[in-house]
Length: 202
Image (cartoon, rainbow, N blue to C red; front, side, top):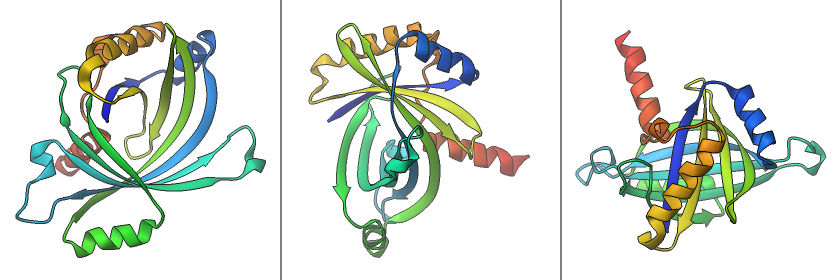
């Protein structure tokens, strides 16, 4: 699959939530993600240099408006290829749902994969209808960065409709008062590593 993704930093959360309401956004679910990132075994290619990522995720789903429903926990192993677009985070993505987080983590460690960092992420999934498209918007908060972000994305079987999909997403973001030049191509992992380096140097 090709993941067409646009990410932006949010400075005014209240304003964005107001825009969600004005554009008939529908709250779907809240999520807590515990993402552990790995690099290849030593001597093989370096994901930092090749712009790839391997992520092991624990995903906890819940409805913030009805906590009586309880939580739903799922686990995923995800590979992300290098970015193929200069203005977005579009890249190849392969995701596999797994049954046992701990065993998969141990398997990767036994094979020599290097565990880099574990990142916690709080998310809300909202859905919008725009130009006959159903667009899913993730409102993210990363405690380690103390920042809010929005991610909008489409999943495509091939890059055939890549440009059209990008334009639809950029046009939708304009409804929220977000300009295309605000798009961030760096992954959360890259932003966090930069922040940690900055803290070490201060």
